[in-house]
Length: 600
Image (cartoon, rainbow, N blue to C red):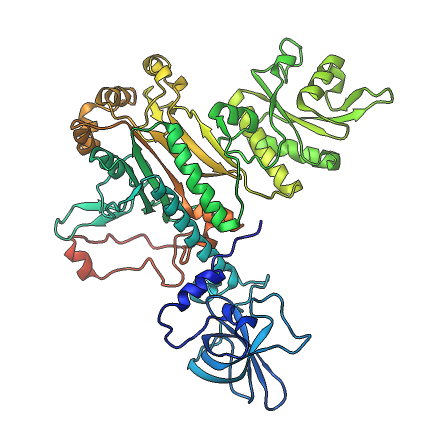
């Protein structure tokens, strides 16, 4: 995937229209078009090469690229020193051009150099080499790490993504509104960061895990279409796609359907994708949650490859094969099936067991001398010819393919096969490209608690599917929500829903969740009170810009598209945060610290 230019020639020329300070030109616009002109460029020394006693070549790097400068003397100079170079643009001698650079046809000759700042020896090279140091070293010296071309590109690409999102949403009449960073505790959802109040000792704000309630209040306030590129905080364990603080596109609109919301988001994401990669006319297919689980074993399926899961239980009902006479028998064709040895298949059986399955059935498809298909399998002798033919036909298997199957309850078979499907594809296939997918009709409730009350799969303001409303009391786990997720390459980018705006419906949902009127008022009283003053039908969506930027930049972790990320243990290695604060500061908040047990 080729990233689009994020600091193109037009952007540089626009910069040059502003006051220039110490420079007249950026490196990337020092080209053949201005040969003969005197220029002044500023930046960091990328490399130094001495030729004889009276000639020094330096590659000067700035925010836009690199330009070669020729100085007719030997000078003391080291990488990452900050310099200003003044000289005349000349064509490079024939055969010395560097086509990898925008300025590779020319150089700044007869240059005069001014050292603006010297630098200590850097802990690692800024050039984009493969043998980078451990990530902890890179994060400790993040201000050096960010000079690398890859991270410069990532951060600039992210800015272009934000710009495209704003442009798209504002074309639909959305208004950018900022919501508070100091908010009221909301017990549902993720764990929040608490902020003590100095003026109200003993009371706390929280940092928002989402602007969810605030944006619904904006709908009641009549703003109709809101959006925000919002900073959110969640005190949760970190991983490759999660940080304590993250950025999301947050939007809400009134008098709309969920199809409208999906259209708004599809357009914004399409324009962001084109700005970052140059790719356009991408498909955004829509499937239901049930279909996603059934075909892919996941509610965030990676559809860059096939190998869909098929149901085979109907072939074995009453067959006498105990292991297969189960509520569900799911199966898919393993990627690169011809390469699976018996030991590899045994490893897959063990892996399926660690995922919770009783075992894993495999069938290697072969073509007999008469052209008919046969299977090599531990249970081949128990299978009838018509069963084998149906399996091969239903899955579209060919000679050399390996069919993997798991039996048991439907949820178990799909969970195990969904995991195996992705693991095998990553190990055996070259996964490229961008494949978006909308998943709709999620369950309203995910399970029952110990008291038999359903547990909300989303926040408690999600509107149930009107067709399922009568099931709320009798069969709550069968109720579908008017909710929807956007998925990219197996990553959940974000989710949204149509909200409950009718107090009667909200009361029934609270009742189903086992939330009393007293508790509801304690937690959400200000929102419920606002709904009593006339709430329009509304819905919204939010997706992680960190995740989108990482995928569009071809990165495996969101830390590579965040300027100053934390480690997976929540540390900021550059600043040393988190740190202790003084007793005096604690006292001003009315707080004291208990002595923590000493670590062994």
